[in-house]
Structures are given as structure tokens and as C-alpha cells.
Image (cartoon, rainbow, N blue to C red; front, side):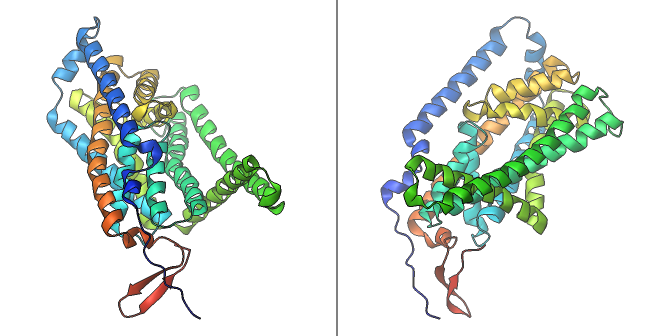
Length: 375
């Protein structure tokens, strides 16, 4: 069987700036918006009456515990990198996976709606390396679902544990069993939606693209990516890959524990079960399209913690400290990672091209070999 040599993809310098939605102008605008929001929050905390207790807590915050929170954010980021590599390209080196993954986290810190900005940046990098758009779309769906699994399972396990008294802290069924039931229903709906989308996509595909309008072609591709992405996410979970499982757990668990560390920086922390379920429910505020989830996540977390009888001043202080860590640590590390990623794309394109289907490369001891489309 003959093989065809594929040269590494040629990357124009104009392509190295990033995807259109992450252009320099857009990033600058987001940064200014974030800085303005931070300034408004600082002014409000300093000047508004009735916030004396909050100001006192923040003024006496333990720097040691805040540094623990910074370390936990880095560990959470490493979990994200592991999941990215396992889902998108297991042949990619850990160095390049870290550059892409950390760049995504930096974009997630500045852009709205559940990490859409970060995923756009990752898709841009993989596309520059030659991975087909259909495969990127399918794996993006799988990635989004997989990173959501620990959140949903966490609500189910902790909600049922609180409802049955296994975990101490809250017995109200509306705050324990109900969220668990909703989370379980979300799993069923996601699987059902995947099957329906796959069926509808195949139905449209059988008609042939030439018979479909452009809008229907996009619909067909979107439904196919959704259906196949759900199917792939389930297959990866069944695979039981230890790196993937540990990455998923680390990405969520270390991030939750940042809130615990910021509570400890300001004083006592609530029971871990209460902290976890409040975090998992409150994080839904991140779906509000505000850069970094600022405002949406904060209000969601503070409000949910208050529902579980956590002091409002304590919750507000801990969440503000958490937001500072969750925003600036990924932004700084992600910015440095993006600089390194651009250099990789410019000078070492084969490091990402290895993820493209049918890539031919030199392997010591084997000579020139063709890498297939499956990873």
C-alpha cells in the first residue's frame, strides 16, 4: 500500500493572531469591560453603607489561604489540560496540549457563555493544524458534555446525601432532593437529545447536500455533530481512561476547593457538602453572557450559599476572593500560553499537525508512517 506525504500545514502570519471572535480589538474591549466591572465592585465595597462586616473580612484576609486558592486554580487548570488532550488528540505532546488548554482557560476567563470563547480558540488551533471542522465540532460537543458530567453527578450524589442525612448540613428536600432529581433528568434529556439529533442529521444527510439549502446544510452538520458528540462522550466514559477520569475530577474538585480556601482566608468555612452543592448550582450563573461570568456566577454563588444558611457577608467575601483568583490566574497563565502557542504554530506546526487524519511523520525505528484518523 502506497502512502502520500503530507507537508506540515502552512500558517500565514495573519492567522497567528487567533480566531476572529478573539481578535486583539475584542480582547482589549473585554479587558476594559472587566477592569471597569472590577472598579465598580471595589468602589461599591469601599463606599456603600452597610458593608462594614464585608470590608472588615476582606481587610483581614489570610494571604496564605489565598495563595492556596491560587495553587488550587493551577491544579484545576492541569485537569482541564488532561481532559483536552484525552478528548481532542492523544498524540499531541503534553507541552502543546498545555499551551492550547491553558490558552482556552485564559479565553474562558474573559469571554461569556460556558467557555465558548476558550473552545473557539482551541478549535482555531486544531484547525490550523489540519484537523477537519466536522471532527472538531464532534469532539467539542463531547468535551463540553464530559466536563459537565462531574457537575451533574456531583449535584445528584451530594443532593441525595444531604436529603438522606448521609451528609450533614441541610435536610430541606427542595434544596437537596429536588436539585438531584433535576440533574438526573438532565442526563436523560442529554442522551435523548443526542439520539434524536443523530437521527435527524442522518435523515437530512440521506437527501444529499445538493438538495438542501445552505441553512439546512448547516442544520444537518450541527445535528450530526451534536448526535455524534453525545455518542463519543458516552464511549469515552465507558472506556474508563484513568487520565480522562482524573482530569475531569481535578478540573471540578480543585475549583470548588478554591471557594473553601477563600472562606478559610476570611474565617470559618461551611460544611463541604453545603459548599459543593451551592457551588454546583450557583455556577449555572456562568451561562449568563458576561465576561468571565462576572456578576452571574457571583450572584448565583452568593445567593445559593445564602439559601443554605451561610452568612451573607461571609459568602460575599469568599465569592469575591474566589472570583479574583478564578479570573486573573487563568488570564495571566493563559496569556503566556497563547504567546507560546503562536510560536508553536509558526515554528513547529507539525506538533499540532500530528492530530490531523492521515498525517505522515517520521517515527524512530519505523521510518515514515501514516497516522490514521482515530485517536
